[in-house]
Length: 136
Figure 1 (cartoon, rainbow, N blue to C red):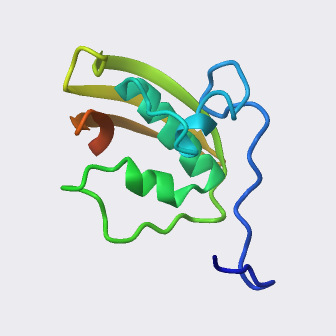
Figure 2 (figure 1 turned 135 degrees about the vertical axis):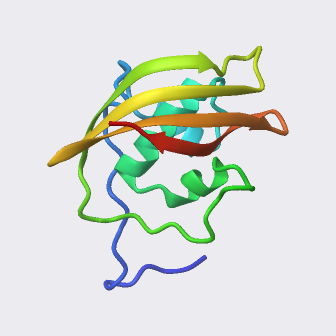
């Protein structure tokens, strides 16, 4: 196990309430997906948990839930980015009865927002993010 030195920044502390917008504690909501204790049961749940991974800086989870076909070789998060809210606008497919789905959302950050339609697929039974289209 690697040791942290004073030069290695610590990841942000886990929030008490879940940043995904659903009521409940982070540990009982998206935190259980991040820890590997459960898998997201739908494309929307995966979308919410990936947003939370951006909030808490969980690069490992983002990589694990990215489709192998489209996953970047490296993912560097901007430590200055402060996400402030998630709004799910539309969901198509993506349930236990589907193999694909889309989630349209608006993620707010300090100074603006990101509007995207994300595509998700199942790989070996687990939901993964494929790609997204930025919307105006």
